[in-house]
Image (cartoon, rainbow over all chains, first blue to last red; front, side, top):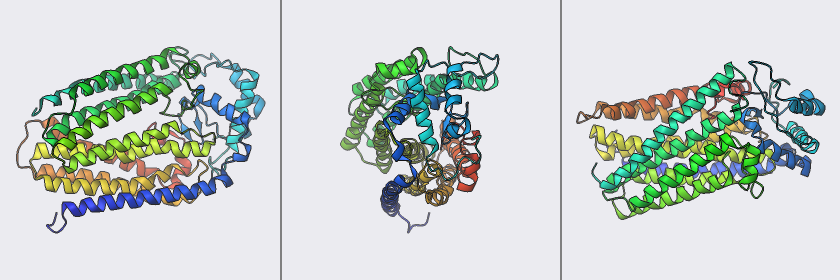
Length: 141
Length: 342
């Protein structure tokens, strides 16, 4: 609050600081893009995986599940469900919903075709092969 | 009220309160579903309740920001609003579009809703908080641009204060970063990376600018402390906000396939993120202690003091608890993060 530190100094620091750190953020983003190909498993981004991602999105799976830790915490993490359970279990599980067990959490029945189920599994397999710096700490996610 | 056109803020605040009540109701439904798993199933599955809950939050906050801007800017600019009619028209457009979206969530299966609303043309749906159908997203952009036009024109024709400038910067930033909601690459890592440019750069970036401007405005009104002093500290606080918050985005990049150096950048900068909230709290208490008048609006004074405290505890302290990468490794994807991913 001393007289030497004026409003215009504060304003200049604000604009300078913001521009500097935003540019730094852009530079880090640029560098991240150079690193992504080593980690993001893009080589396995097949048309089937892309179709599976769309199934994932249009059934609002993220509204109950997490994927790589992001989403809702009502139902299990699915980033590593492929190595945890395998394709047949995943498909069978989705087809068997809802369980109807009284008082237990219920997953809706989405009436996915065999092809849609395969696409979804392909997407979950692709996701599980992304390099997530060893997260989650264990296979149960 | 010093200017007649400020009255246009009123429906915005009423709507914000109504939507907030809706948010609470759906929050309670979800809470019950955690305890009684099949509560309201299959009528309102958890994912639908959550979508309604979080989207209502976003919309009432936007209503609140817009209402506050319509109230504040005429007084700051010392002129009537550029177009009160446009403000009122936008209110109804936004309210009806929002209500239709919620009705869609509740009564149409999400996959059908996606098909009906052009998700096959541009797939943007089904990502957390950005579940809105394409027409709603476009509507948000149109309403935001028309609102910004109205506010910017008002500032341009009147007095230009630092508070107005910071508010405008925050509101324009809000609109610009929302545009990343239209970017949904097939590559999941890039999808997540830029998803945070909406979510994090809103909550820990531009929203704090808007909050700071509102707080500064209220403090000038209720304390009578010199504008020069308050605006100076506003700049200091928002400097701290953006210097820590922008790179602080990195605390979301630890485990989603981004380079591992983000564990350092994210930890260091987001560990500093409580500082602007602390500064905001100290600033508000200081200004109120130095007040030159007892303002009869005790609620406004209490809000000015309380908002910083709550933000410091919630976003600052709670956020810091699990923001360091080695801690976050064990808390990521758990309820510690709560449903508000700051």
